[in-house]
Amino acid sequence: MTLPFIANADDAIQKYLGKRWELSKTEKNYLEKGEVLADANVTTIKKEQEFKLKAVALHPKTCTKVLRKLSMLENYSQWISFINRSEYNEKNKLFTLRADHMLLPFPMIVHIIVDRPTQPGVYPFVFPTGIFTGLKGEFEIKKVDERCLFYAHSKWRGEKTKIPDLVIEVFSETLSKLGGEVLMRKVR
Image: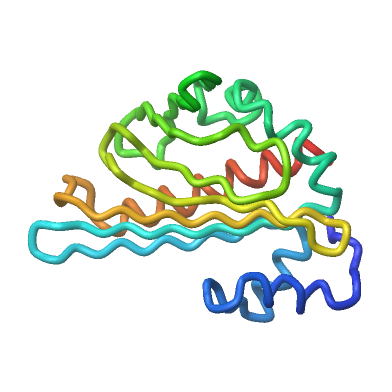
């Protein structure tokens, strides 16, 4: 499904992304068609591994309409096949996911400290536990020409895991795209 074209949307999106992500013409076309873009980069230097991930999506509806559904973090396990369980503790701002997919090296429990997204804005997050303990990032929800733009980035550096760089890149990019696209379809 191609999103409705709005004049200058390309310019508004690229202006917002700036140097964070210079989209190619092909990537802009994919974004306009409602696809989620994800890019992961993992490098190992001696005994340390560094992981960077960024993702962007554009929804044809307003952020207010989209967030009514996307803010229901507890329902993600009902919508996304590789998430077996999703919980959100309002008091501690702790989002817990239990995930299992053939691309994951093993079933994972992911803890994320983050505010529930209820309106456009910037939402910092951190992984307090797990294989990527200390991973930090943020996602931003922004109105662009009556549509809703989502951008996320994260970074982690720590002791080398037993998972090869390429495997981390593949599973993080693929699952970010798959999960993001399911969520975008849920609010159409």
